Image (cartoon, rainbow, N blue to C red; front, side):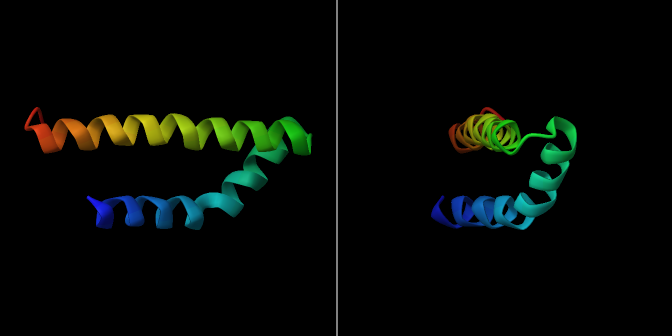
Length: 60
């Protein structure tokens, strides 16, 4: 599971700059863009964790 966690964070890091630029373009505010990116990563992390847990438990 550690390898998949590491890969997940590598993907997040690879998308961070484009995601930041997109969020800044949407919000026109550095603070709001920071919140938007943080929320997106947090929501994805929760979804990713749930999918991974379902896979490990054999539900998928």
